[in-house]
Length: 609
Image (cartoon, rainbow, N blue to C red):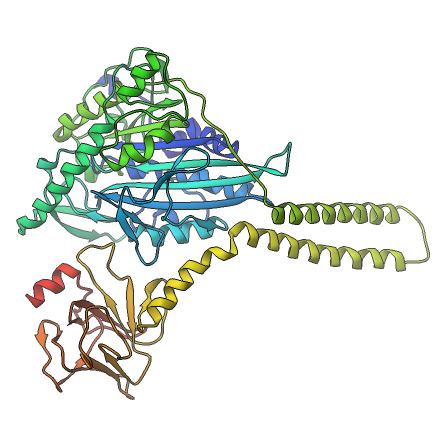
């Protein structure tokens, strides 16, 4: 206990100072860097690499345009990169989630998902890539926060006893930075940052689907109190089946042998009595044994992250360690095996060519002692194989070279005019026309410079990249369906789809733009599940009321069937089932009835059943 109390408290700022600057510089130098967060659900993996990310809390990292104390590593690194970003730079982002045997593209407004082996290929630099997942250009910090918030809302999460928003699959973000090389502007360095927020390591049999009560305090603080298991055992069983696949994928990664070295570091926001990791960071050939923490009540302290940081230059698989010891480990050469699950299949070749930062997060409560020892055992045995990270580069396109040269010429002209202006200021002359002319030339050149910089930025952002999304938008529009990504701000009343899987929920809108909107085959809105003409219809009345009229198909409002020809008035948050579509009614600036709330898909289905 005394040893724990004497340890130094380390916060998010200190973690960044410990390794964040190095990671940022590595990426800007053209290195590939991988950040792993490994540990029990609720131990702070996401908090360490991202910071608070719940959309309903004011301290969520993507709600802030300037750094805050709670920011994790990724926001701090990305913020710095955008502050340094200059002409000719480009930043792109991929963000996807592996759920059991599928991959979901979180950046895609339509929500593509495919079997994980589909489209997984090595790129020209030898790094594994999922070709069909969108690589989205990012303009600036604000653009990153907006795109991340939208993408993160599609992430599969479930409430378990460990965490009210437990990530049910491995999430990987890839931030790619291209910038002209100082020594040769015709070539660009290409740095990559892989942020791997792994699913929880708890054994599948220990998980249950939990119920929480959300509490909001006067100061705005939000707390989720665990109430116990959900009465529907089917949900727990589904989580446990999913957890088995997660455990198998993590155990495949953990086939490690000898511990070669480790850096130990305390995490952010631990109260002094719970600060039981070694501090400051110590390079050691024999890891210290960490004393067990005392009993701890989570409501007493801020969310904690006790992280064991292993700073490696490569890899920690058993087979990689064996190859290294045999002198057969070569960057770019594949390691046989470890192909059974997505995680290893995607990352094993990339990790051989990258700098790797592993964060093993543990929970300090005595209740989770067995998980703590399992996680620390993984960390202790993680191999450190000394390999030099591969630096990638790419040639600037002819268009990029042309624009950059034109920009350089303009800047040279601007500098020359500035010198002439300064020279004139030092001379005594009765003719001011030359000075006024230079000032006018400067203003014109500044305008031209700004236009050229904008042209370069548009080229870096890839103006044609929006074509695919626009094409998807038009394809749905032919059936009268709007993508929520584009139409969520509509002033018209609309129905929004609900799904038990949050990834597929609130993806499509059925906007009621006409006085009468007919649903069904050859109607105004033609969902794929409606093969009957005049399935039902909705009318927007002059007085501001919206009604639903039954037709040739089965239509239900708030669990009650609407007979053919019968009309029911709709109110905000009403639930509608038509054919295979589960929908909720919305209308901007219109209040729901007193006591009404947004139903989840589960609640709406229970009402119907």
